[in-house]
Image (cartoon, rainbow, N blue to C red; front, side, top):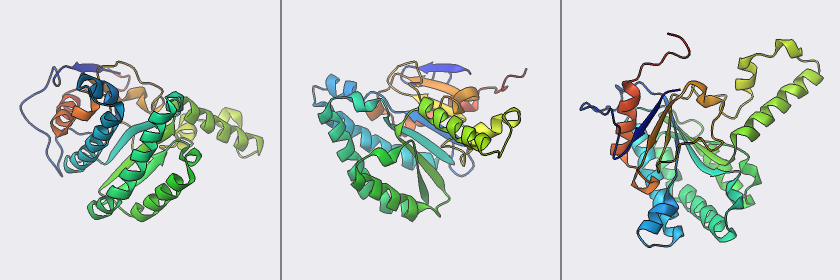
Length: 255
């Protein structure tokens, strides 16, 4: 995997820009680890909850930009399985923002052709949130312009564990032999089985780790790190990341 780090954008950014409908960047599937809401609020001497609220606004703008820039899929790390360890008040605020986001944006998803998909064990969330998510998934199921995959109560190690258990049950049932298990069987058992391969994984806020996100899918994805905190990550920042991706040579282990 190649790594690029950006301060105020990509170190190898160029003058041309990615365009809608016929993207020059070549990326189909982009995932983002949205990091830095708390630090954004702290720098501005604001409550942490306002940082998360500003982060939701950034999500809304980036989803719109992703569709305009020709992405087929955008996967966002919204709430990890480890985030339950945060203070109860902060978790409650995050769940409240999730409710508001689904309620306020579902009509825009329908109008703009965005299909909602959720990866992770979202059914462990509050029952009213689960019902809202199920309704949004159903209402947007036929949309084809772009897929927004939201990772909720998600951890890549848990995802792979669930995949292994699924395959093990098939072996136990006599549906397949252990020696016949192939990489494609594992990929097909993951939450992202119906999505195109991951091309680019972006992390904001300057942190240089994957934090248990899409570990299998990121095997040959390009990585892009930016100092921009998530609430400040806008269309221009996304374009810089896509420009960086478009100028890399991907070998997938070859020469």
